[in-house]
Length: 308
Image (cartoon, rainbow, N blue to C red; front, side, top):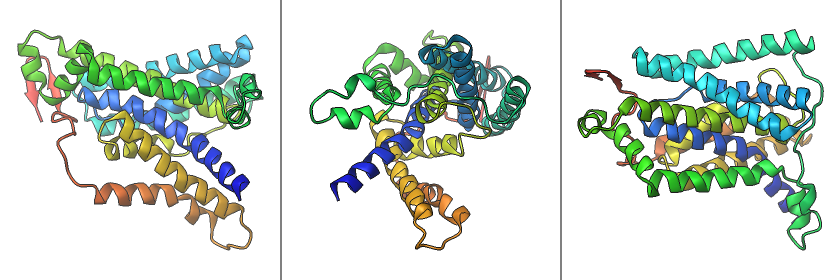
């Protein structure tokens, strides 16, 4: 029984990590007032760039860095569209998803002559932890990027709630006109939030490519970006809440995988695969309204022009 519980726990952590990391990235973007439905595109771009970086350098950590940069570049497209040209945030984000999925599929096929890349040096296990008493065998089965994800979450909490920069981001997301009147550069702050979001979403994609697997596969994000959007709303734009929500969604994801592998249960796999999404939507719909939502989220704020 303990072995089954441990296996389920490891599965939940593995499946929740990309949702959690991408959710942290989304939090930065939405804290500065930019609605981000394009995290899926940032993640899949980060995944391909991570694989390419690891493939050409032979170093998976450099691959992770390439993945983060790839996510930031794609996020910048979303930022320019929304900040400079006043694009509708939701349409820009969804369009970004389709663009990134098509582009990464094309590049993978062009470089590797297939929709699946060859295996590359990866970060699937914490080999250094296997000799640690008690927790060593557990940590060994996880990617070191899980620890990086926890470190990013802690740093994000400190930045958002304990530093002047975080206070500026929160203020920009609540009332950019008042912030501009106070002499703070609203547009630089918005761009910073979007770029940080891209870097972290690129890390989430890198985890999927190099932490869970050792290659790029067409459409490998499989809706994790949209689960991250749900996690941010349910987690009330707070890293602690996002972590709890991601673990809950990861639990439902692990359950649907176990059900699929159980031959005694004859349920169409397509029906089972929607379980985490249904769970997220139901919990989100039952969530009570609060004051945590950035007041100017999804608002168009152009230079010398403010409109909703």
